[in-house]
Length: 350
Image 1 (cartoon, one colour):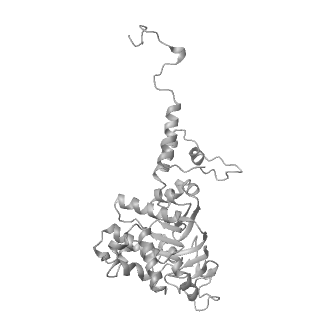
Image 2 (cartoon, one colour):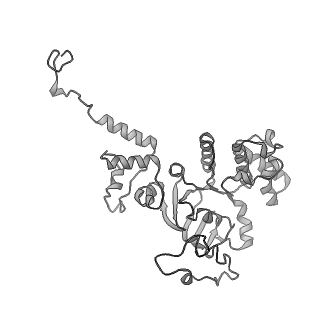
Image 3 (cartoon, one colour):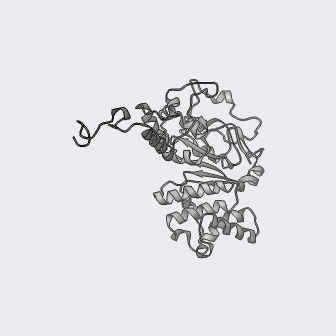
């Protein structure tokens, strides 16, 4: 079920849903202001929150979305299940324009959106009713709702029998977030969109949630992950979309995107920590293999941008540094032609 963005722009100050989709109230040529780029932001005098977004989320993707605070990430993902509609352009899900209310209602259960701090949206008196809310709204029969709740709680590693009657507000913070996840998974989406899903969690719980998300992707879910953590995006995602002031800044594999450290730094973003360390080592003359091509680009027909062929993580960087160390002669080592005999000046008995 691909999600296609075709020239999507959204304004908080202009009508977001024209009465006649064929005759938008704001025309593209009227939407721009003089200067280098359109006005951006959600202030009263700004026009676009996002502007001219073009990309396709393919089935099976694990897409990371990065950008400085206020770059339009949350606005973008709310278009993915029809919570908001483009002012200009259109969003197609499985080939259908979801500006149509009937079409949007048909697909909404297939695209699950988990907001930041989802436990703040818990509301029911017990875990069962909270997780069952979505399936019931989809009109599923009681026995099917029950199966959805059981399956969803199992997916997030929560025990159905011990928690079904428990108040979600009496659970630990980590359990509350898992219940909130289960409420989305109970609708059996094919695409899961996560807005900073591990914000505010302690390191152990955070790592547990990231492993859960990775497992859901392995089970077949298409995943969109909004995050400020470049390490997470590099480790988990097969593609990364970077936004700058509401516009697409970069889209590609983690290797392609994070090869451009200087450009990312200029817009307030970093690169994964291992990659950043590798960049600094190369700048100091350490001959790390492929990364040298990124810092001193060698453009070829096969590699026109001179980008790195790999993205370093902690393990791969450690392995390469260890190999470089082993390849160097030990400091002060005695070479064969410099053999020193016992008792000779400088020898072991001197």
